[in-house]
Each structure stands twice: as C-alpha cells, then as structure tokens.
Length: 147
Image (cartoon, rainbow, N blue to C red; front, side, top):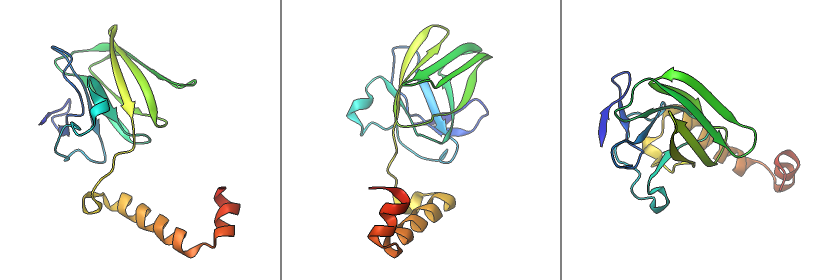
C-alpha cells in the first residue's frame, strides 16, 4: 500500500508489521512502485532495501530518533535526532537497524523489475551491459572482468 512519506512523497511500503511500528523504506529511483514485497517469503518481519540505491528509512508513527545501522564487515551508519534517514547500502546482505533502541532487520537484495518499468538510466545501463556481453569475445571478457 502506498502512503505519504516524510516529505509527502508517495512510497512503496517495503516493510512488515511489527505490532504497532514498522520500518519503512523508500527507494529514490522507484518511488511510484505499487506493492509491498509480499511475494518474498524471507521478508516476514523484515524490511527490503536495494544495494547502491539512495533509500529513505523511517519508523511508521515515529518521531526524531537516534539511528544506528550496521551490517557485515566494517560498514556502519549513525544519525541522531532524525525522523528519517537517507542511506545507501553498500551491498547485498543482512543489516540491523536500531532506532531509539528498537531493533529492525533489514534485507538488502537486488529487485527484479519488468523491463518497461525501469528508469531511463537503468534501462540504458541494462542494454549497454547486454550489448557488451554480445560484442566481447570470451577471452577478452575474462581478461577484463575475470571468470
């Protein structure tokens, strides 16, 4: 279901019910998407985000809060006194978001989209990659990009 975010923009609810409060994610490139990600069984009580995409997070019904988000490795994000935060997750994986001590599980995955729904930039990047795959000889591809 779509509802108004911190700046009044409509967003995709990629969050699960946690009783009273949910952690909500809005990806800047695709704010008009419809749906809740319910097709993903591994998202029960988790929030879905995408790697390398500017994402706004907030807790439904929340106000200014202290934020701490961490994942595997050294990556960490901190903010204080913010009702929402803008984060770019550095890769696929599992993350933990602590908002005023409340813990939310965040799952970062690539999201498959219908090709006609891609942004112009994503569509150009996709077709550019396909073009490169078809034009490069196998040996040259291995030399440039590895196995």
